[in-house]
Image 1: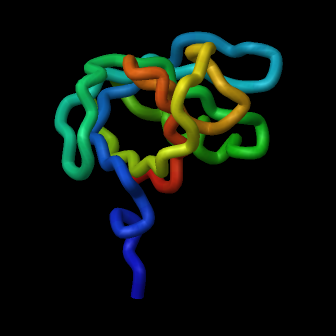
Image 2: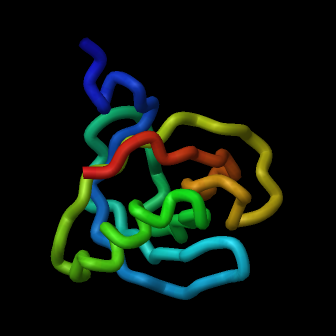
Image 3: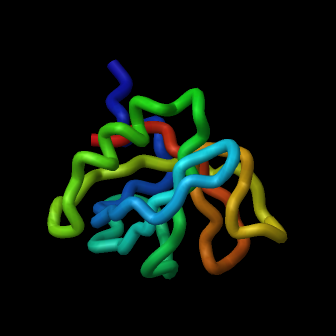
Length: 104
């Protein structure tokens, strides 16, 4: 059986706070507490959550800044020009986009 972390290239412990709503998504400010799998030098980022992933946004909205969530991401693309992409995920400081594959 494949567990959630096996599907992810990058697993992070995050503290999350709602930031804003844009036309197609919710945006959450994230602070990286710990890297559990993979390599990530980005310490904070905006996580974009698209409309079809409303259940993820609802889960994140219930968390306080002191709560920690575990999030797994799969590498999406390199060389991104924008910080917010039309995926549920984020763009790191190296301009690589990461798509969310699980949240717990």
